[in-house]
Length: 349
Image (cartoon, rainbow, N blue to C red; front, side, top):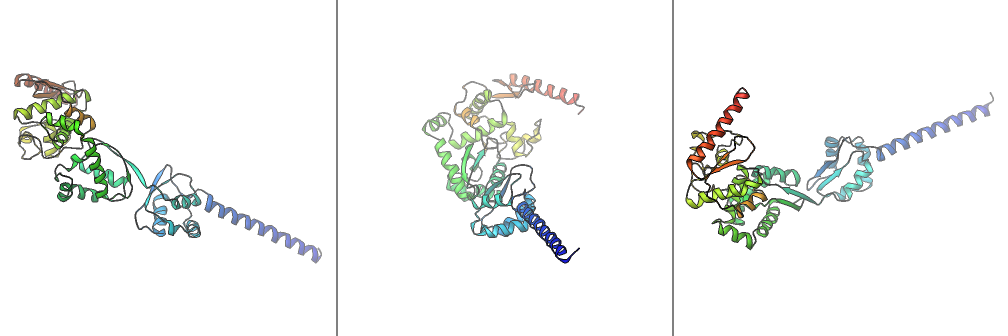
């Protein structure tokens, strides 16, 4: 083979090699920029607290989202000046997103507001955990704020009844809302709820708005059946008006911190606590939970009757038998306890 032919062959080999190398480089570059960059199977939130840096972002992406190409992401982020466009917020990342999509999404600013769903039956801890999970401040920040005497007094409550301020609803709030701003919003909703019509209904029942919330929380814990809530509310209003201890089992369970207790004994009813309505007369100092809208309405529109006793039905349906006299109540209680004993026997307990 002559020298010119050898040279041409060598040139072709070099040319093809360069093309292959360039193609592989382009493919690699494309994969790193536009290929699947995170290893998540479903939608997931990326939370960036205030003051986060590009390095903080990259660490979160690696540790929480399995970022595949951190060096490529860093180069792209620097090229697109992401560090100067980082804003605190909650960002929704989807499976299959590539580095370019992630950078563009974060540059766009993330979630500024969020819909916060506050349900009835939540305890103070439940509420603060919900806030800490969905908003930028920590759950303990909200817990401290809600339990602070100074904070409660700011809105006319105390540290025992501050949960009465919270009306169950869906609130659109800023993700970075600090406790003061958030509870100002909740207090605004509380004031709006307590319009003149509801204030007059509370007054007619002999209750303040705070007392309505406390009683409603007891109603919630007594029954999950909306169609008997007004009857239960009427029963406790009868007891309040007659100066009879409420003797509500849920208040005992709350006082001794045993929400799953099935049977109440003397050792429980004699437990000294302002929340134990077997032990003290009148309403406890604060609610057992955030009252539901249904129980609030039940108290404000309570059923007028003569009942002062209630006992769970022996069919375990969740409904109750109501009674006017001790004798009737004792019979209802015996039927329930007999049914409970039979149930335990059938379960080998």
